[in-house]
Image 1 (tube, rainbow, N blue to C red):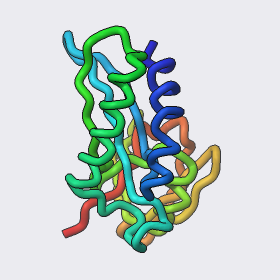
Image 2 (image 1 turned 30 degrees about the vertical axis):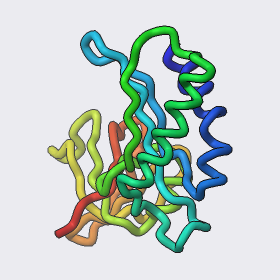
Image 3 (image 1 turned 180 degrees about the horizontal axis):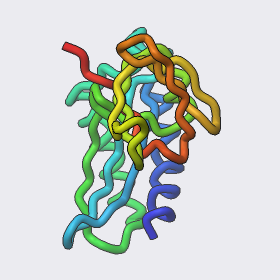
Amino acid sequence: MSKRVTELVTVMLEPFLKEQGYELYHLEFVKEQKDWYLRVFIEKSPERDGDWPGNVGTDDCEIVSRYLAAKLDETDPIEQNYYLEVSSPGMDRPLLKEKDYARYRGAQVDVRLYESIGGKRNLFGKLSDYNSETITIELENGESITLPREKVSKVKLAIIF
């Protein structure tokens, strides 16, 4: 069910996003307790205003939300009641796709592991390399560590103050 909804909404939304200078970062249709949520995360495309990546404001979210709400009301593809949320992926956005890893290579990241390595389940450092099987992080002490992707629970951009 969730996969069908996300695929349908993606097909419905992507042409509009491209036309408006946005990209779909992530989309999810999830049930939390008794309520369903359709969450759409957008960012500006590289061609738009040189602001890429990110810099999505509330006006941007409103534009996309109004368009998508109208399209969903018109076609009514989702059987159950749901809440529509449109937002940016945030400053500490998770890296989900290969293009995210390519885009943020060299950035500071927080890495969460499924199991401890060297007594640690959370690592902080610079994303120095990646491929389909591993990611390499340069730790604060200058040491590089290569992690098998199947041992990595989550990689997200670090917020540095």
